Length: 264
Image (cartoon, rainbow, N blue to C red):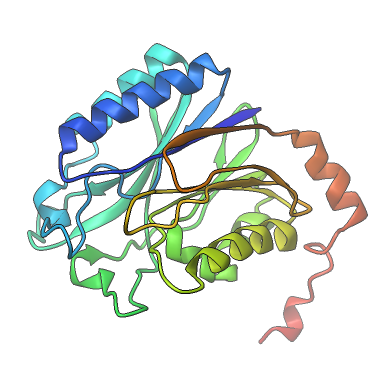
């Protein structure tokens, strides 16, 4: 199983963002990737600095943005994971921060609405985003079991553990990890920690640009960094050996050694 991360900048121009995403989906396929992961809220850069509200750019899941991604997934026969803003009919002031997972036939396999919002470091995502209420469930593919979580949710080990208890093989983490003191260290440390403690592959796909840290990573179940990016736009690719998961879990059965009766 080969995974590509499209570490990209985004902008307030939804059309140009989509065009670039389609180019990188094609590039990922040309490199032999089975999955391509595009960062959180890639659809449009809606932050306080840009003055764009997520609700103004948001679309339904059958809107033109996701429809174009589905067509690209089908044309290139590749799985696509991408962050977008999903509209809600009865809340015109806010939107969902949603990640879609599209299969190689162009079908929407899963959509995950970010549940833990980034109300930290003087930022308040909940002013413009509706928290999701979806369950953390793995998605079955011919390659293995996939989990989705988003950005700030890396700081909550309980979420990744829910996927581990469902025997997830790979955890995809689209992100718009904000830059700031120690933030790059936090990002890299947390990705490796989630991989090690749950003995799974973790793929963190981050935005780049003045507001974001970049440093996207693909990490194996022992915390080994298989591929990583810097601060520029790039396509990061790594081969994921799913058999390694079982080898690691046989040597390090830490998830099986849990004692939930003591965790109350």
